Image 1 (cartoon, rainbow, N blue to C red):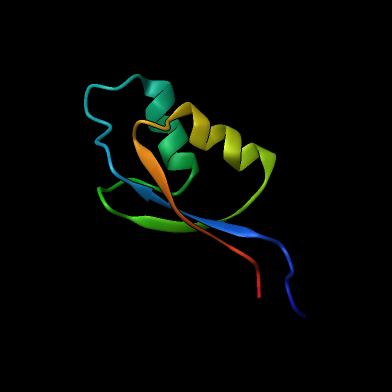
Image 2: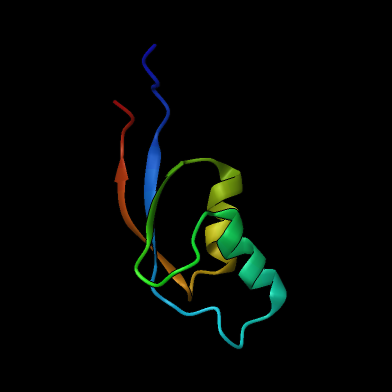
Length: 67
């Protein structure tokens, strides 16, 4: 079954050291916990909101259409 949802690739570029617990929890919620780790996530308003909360710790590497 083909999945036609759009995805984004998010890379962690900042360390969670000396960051508030909420920001650490957001990183973990996105599946990130180490520097330069990348995750492919569904492009949804919830994920975009999480990325916006920790924009100084992550970057969107690429937007790609689901296959």
